[in-house]
Image 1 (cartoon, one colour):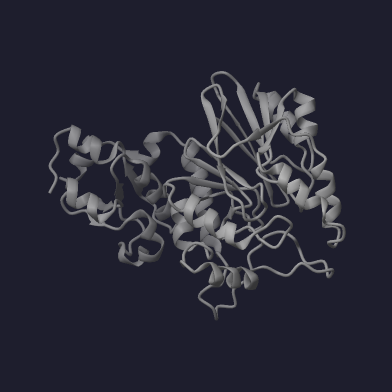
Image 2 (cartoon, helix red, strand yellow):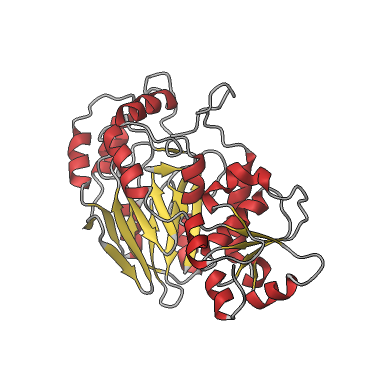
Length: 380
């Protein structure tokens, strides 16, 4: 799959395309057309869909303009007409109404229903209806990635006090629609103002100030009200930037430098040769007989180890718990570590977590326990 992220002053957009057939889509385009046109031209991509994950209120969409230029169809959630009706009633909101009006006039060629799929050759995008930031907010699932729009951001969620927003709907979207998804999903939001590239759902589940604590709907509403700066005429940013933590509150939103390092590690993992990051079952078996054998970290759930066994000597810390239990790992950052899961997917993300914390010699067990058992190697 061809994948490219664009960053315009914290507004994030994406191109995804099938590497074999060259068919693709642009997600949440903004600011200027040239970077998109240059990339799809140099990559020989035929864009068939230009998608907005929701009706933007903090910047103008370029979906219609790019679609007209490249001969593509514009796509939004099937709740976009309702969101536009809500927006049309806004007459005076510190200048926001002008952006709402212009975006509300953009052409929509195709309305995407919840669960409906767009296909571009061997690449697909599946819609997940997630209202809360706006009535027409949706996320897009695609091959291990979650394009989360302004619903789930890195470290928090989108604000809910704009036209069409709803704290109750955001609560349901986060905890009923997104939270049940795989920890392994890479999260790519429509905004980030802290230099982050992406995250993973497992990381967000543990560290995101809106997800990590399960609250009642009422408590969630009060928390969001305290999290975001109010909309007023003083020029406060509309963007959902995290409040800076003073250190006095456990709910402080400051992510610190680790998240950026982790994002960079994930991007490097995606482009490096597989052998750089993984170890085959046979190689691990030989390594366990050597004097300087690796530290084995099994990142599955405890019940998975009980049901199917594990490699002797492995320490069990589920992948989502690694950020808060990293102190249990070897103090020596040069200690060789092999991360293990059932298939090799979760363990690859666990290896990225550890690299972000400074561990230098971390590899993931290729094919996981499936591959280990297929070779006839012992489990306990």
